[in-house]
Amino acid sequence: MAIHLKNNTNIKKINSCGQIIKQVQSILSAHVKPGISTWELDQIAEDYTVSKGFVPAFKGYQDFPSSICASINDEVVHGLPSKNRILNNGDIIGIDFGVFKDGFYADSAFTFPVGEVSDDVTKLLKVTEESLSRGIKNAKVGNMLYDISKSIQEHVESNGFSVVRTYVGHGIGRSLHEDPQIRNFVTEDENRDKSIKLVEGMVFAIEPMVNIGNHEVEVSNDNWTVVTKDGSLSAHFEHTIAITKKGPMLLTF
Image (cartoon, rainbow, N blue to C red; front, side):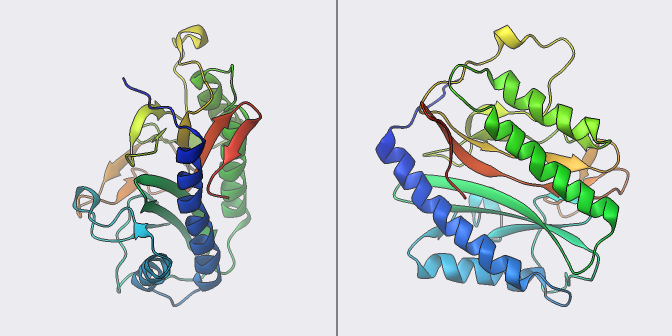
């Protein structure tokens, strides 16, 4: 495992990408309404990013065909935008988006309600976003990677939901996916003291994926979209953060 630390110049470049992601998410939030297609959302994100001189990071990455991942309802991650995927009232949509420029990447995700959603769905979104915040709060010098993972898992499971285990967060910088993996759970036999110690200059994409049902997922027939095995709804939130002496620095917010 090779963890690449970033200096202030590197972090500024990642933050520059992160601010474009923040702007795109704000724009998309105004367009996420019943009747719009996920293809339209993809085009909005791509057009804006390119107009600002940045590159959508996902398009072409491992042959992924689109600029955003658009995952609806029981789709966990990696959903493919399509003209035929129309949002309906009561849906939820997870939009994962990455940006590249000047040799560095940033990555972030939000799950949006479409129109009016049930109380259970509102709770799912709230708890998932809160779990991300708790993970970020623990991303500080002197803590262990274990502390991030455990804080996410504890908050999710104490609220009756489950953490996806097959897909995890990651380091990020010159590559979209770098070491280490940032899991959203710990196993019973894990030892905190044997985990990775957090130091200044680490940059992580922390991204809890949370299901209303159990944690099991599978890849659908399109070979991209990951869905819950039991058909339950899933939410996904993500931020790119840097670990600094003053605490975690959000680079996509």
